[in-house]
Image (cartoon, rainbow over all chains, first blue to last red; front, side, top):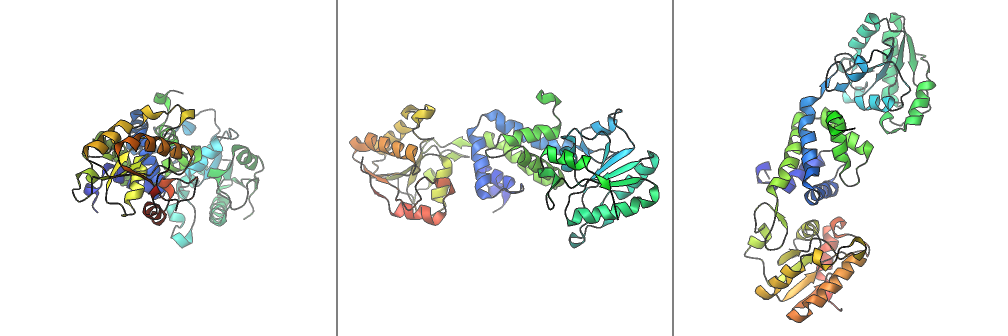
Length: 202
Length: 202
C-alpha cells in the first residue's frame, strides 16, 4: 500500500512504529490518544518534531547537539577547559550533566568502536579531540564510554592515541553495573562513577 | 521554565511524555533517535501528527474516526445494516475489523459507564444508537463492550434501553479472558468471541 492511500491514522501509526521499542499496538495507542486528547497536545508534538531537525545543530567545540554553536557548556566560562569528559553520544552527556558533579568540558565521540558493525576509528571524532587536547593544554581526559565490550575497546584505543600527548587519562569508576548503559543509570550512580575515576591502564 | 526557554530537544521530550506510558527516559530515547535517524523519519512523523486532527472527523453514522463521513464501513453497501456491533472506542472497532469475521455495521459509544469517573449515560452516544435501531429496522445489536465491570455495566444499561425496541440483543462470547481489553486481544480470540455471542440476560 502506497503512503498516499494510507488513512491519516494509519500513516501516523506507521510513523510511530519507527520509534525504538514501539510496536503496532503501542503506535495505535499513541495515535488514538492524540485523537482523543486536546488539540494542543498533538499540535505541540507535531510542532516539536517538525522543528527539531531544523533547529538543532552540532556544537563546533564538543559535538554536542545544540541550538547555537558553541553549546551552552562550551560557552560557560566558569567551566575548566583543561578537563575533558569523552562520551559516546549526546544522551550520555545529558546523563552526566544531570548529576551536576562535573565542571569541565565534554567531547562527544559520535559512537564507539564496533568492528562487527564496520565502525572503525575513522567513524569517530577522535582527531578533533586530539586537537583540542593540544590547543587547550588539557590536563585530564576522562573516558566515559559505556562499560561494555565496545566501550572498553574504544577507551583502550583512545588511551593509546592520547599517550603521546602528555595528558592524564582516566576511566569512569565502576560504580555502574557492568553491561549497563549510561543513559539508563540513575544520577547518584553516575556521579559515584565520576568520583571514583581511576588512572587508565592500557 | 516557560516553553519559550526550552531547547528544541527538551520541548520534544516534554511533548513525547504526554503519550500514554511514556516516561522521561523513553521520551529522551525517542528524541535522540529522531535526531540520529534520517531526516525523512522525523519529517514523516511531524507531518502525520500535524495532519491528524485536521483530516480526521467522526462518521455521522457510527461515530468511527474517518477521513470522510460516512466512513468506509458505513459506505459499504455489501454490509448488512440490520446488524450493529456496539463498541466503546474506535480502537475496539479496529480490533474487530481485523478479524474479518463481521459483516454488519458498527456503533462507537465513545466510552463506557463509569460512575466513579463521573461518566453517566449522557456522556455516551446512546440516543443515536436507538435512533439507528428504529430507522434501519435493526434485527440484532451485538454488545461488544470490554469484559470488565464498566463494560458489563454499560452492556446491562444498553440492553435495558434496547428492550422496548424489539431487537435481539447479544453479548460477545467469553472466548476472551475476563479483565482483558479488546484492543490488546489477538484476532483469533476476538473472532471466537464474536462467533460465541449469546442472548443477553439482563
